[in-house]
Length: 141
Picture 1 (tube, rainbow, N blue to C red):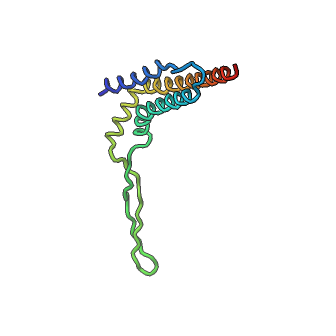
Picture 2 (tube, helix red, strand yellow):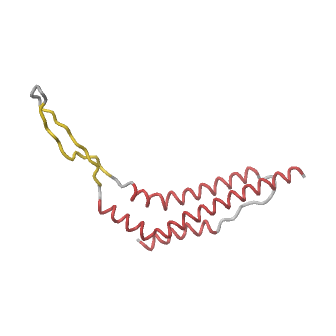
Picture 3 (cartoon, helix red, strand yellow):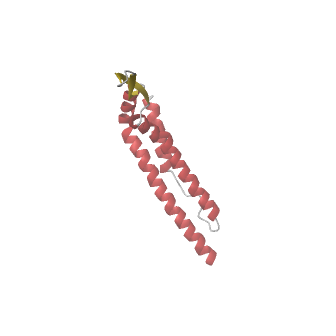
């Protein structure tokens, strides 16, 4: 399991490291926007699929709302009043512990996935602006 997780995380880094802008020709404004949107969606999918679930499992574990205790008292008329006190209890503490271990083991690679996607997005935005500038210059000339 650990080997497969590492492989998937490395694969995410490879796709961001091998990014290349798809076109450098003028008159391609729509194509440039499509490339920009596609690359941004790709990075978002990487982060949503590889980083977010691991963090969510640890930071927001599944809990159930349960009655922790019931306090029974009587009012001035002698009527019995029950007051429930609720608590949030972990559904599966062992799963949470496993998630902590997985997150700790994969933290360096998860960090690299995030950073490489951010780096790619920065490069995508620069390439998009460069392509837009080239397109504008070719339109004038």
